[in-house]
Length: 211
Image 1 (cartoon, helix red, strand yellow):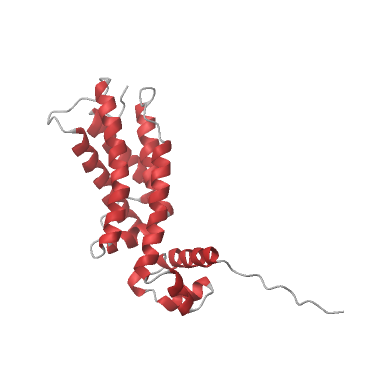
Image 2 (cartoon, rainbow, N blue to C red; image 1 turned 135 degrees about the vertical axis):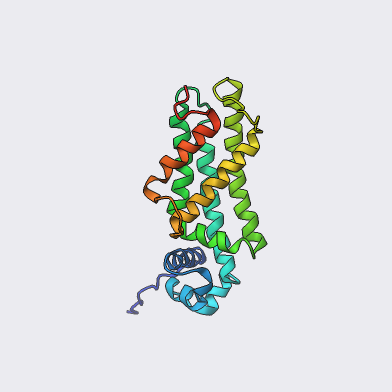
């Protein structure tokens, strides 16, 4: 009778790629991308250095894959946000801004690495811009709707809705980056949603208690 040896569990390519991404996001919480070596990524993923290069050509490629995931989450969550703010505009804006805060917070290491890399990497810059465009498009759509129903004035400067949305979203981006990177000055991360929501409401409605 021939004894059969125990079958070795094979690790699929998708699992190896996932392991690299998990290792990278974990390492990014402790050090910047430039200080992470390919050896660390491979070791963290439980693979060899040559195997790493089968899936990614560089550390920047790993960052792009991580950022692409974050953007996918942004787009899914923006798609699920309310468009009708008539019932409770303050609560609706807080929920919407909260999504922005949560995505940055949940993936703060990836966000920080992307902010640092986008100035030198056109692909990272393009992906980051795509994420910001999703927020700006959504915000503009709601501001236009709120003005159309008479709830939000155009304001003394007659600001274009899209330009206002761009300014507010860029404020969010910088405030969150500073808060989660430990910059100084920076808003306390625990209270940043309150601050951002108040600024948005006053900028859009000229009050923090819109009807």
